[in-house]
Amino acid sequence: MRRLILSIFIILSVIIFNSCDNSVKIFTDGEEVTAVYGYLDVEADTNYLKITKSFTGNAIELAPDYSASNYDYKLDVTLTGKFATSPNAVRTVTLDTTSVFKPYDPDGLFYSGVDQVLYYTTEKLLENQEYKLVINRKDGEVITSKVKTICGSTVRKPMIGISFESPSTNRIEWRSNQFNQLAAYYEVIGYFHYKQIDPGQSDTTHHKMRWFFGSGTGVEMYNSSTMNMFANYTPTTFYTKLASDANIVNNTYTYTERFVDCFEIIITSTGDELYNYILIQNSGSAIMDTPEYTNIENGVGIFSSRSVCRKIVDVNEQSINTLVHKYPEWGFKKVVGNY
Image (cartoon, rainbow, N blue to C red):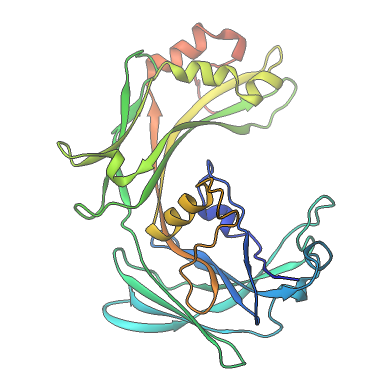
């Protein structure tokens, strides 16, 4: 049977944007192959990689066997580049290992109830820098890859608060931290955060409503006149979305009280490698039914770069008043003292 390159998607499920399919199906023949999945994030305190191997046999039977696709020894894994502790010098750091527990899932196929080994470094990375990954196996095989970190972003609009009263199109705007250094792909999501006190309860619970603003390549979302990137949205759509929020629909009772907390804007950007993988995976090609894009030399997988920009803004008082007075069935109240 063919060798199945099988990865555990603890990291990859975070790498690929929420709107994209995050399954990876790469097949190969021949000797043992190392599979690498991960990204470098300059905003992160710790960067992780998942490194597994191929196995021969029936995937359904062998997938629950952790040892089938995981090395029984610690690989020699290094990352070479410039780090924040010494930004002017190229250094090589050795990645350590840690275990992450994946709870048992009776309906799951892969490795339920088993610790997953991740390789990591706490060295702070720098924007717009090239890093080389080197993996040395005990059998002498060397697996390598290179990636250039993307630049982070700064949200420029809204500046302080956000209003949901206008039926006209408005924009979320952001700019790369380094001039004209655009990422391959961006996704913009908003979260309306609110607090809730249920009838007969004294504890406050926290909830949020997700609002997808848009996604696209850096070139598509770039406005040359303002040198900002943007995503258009209609502010009044907020009330329609909130009306279909699962918590609002299923957990609103008489005397339920809710309080507006804030609005969070999250802009996630990714490097060329992951964007190319997404393009191939979603190409719908009748010729290639299994995506085979990889940027791992002497192995398979995806090694890319990501950046996440977050900004918290207040909700405009007029919008809070609209929630309180126009939609009393939702139970929103004006804040009075502490709660």
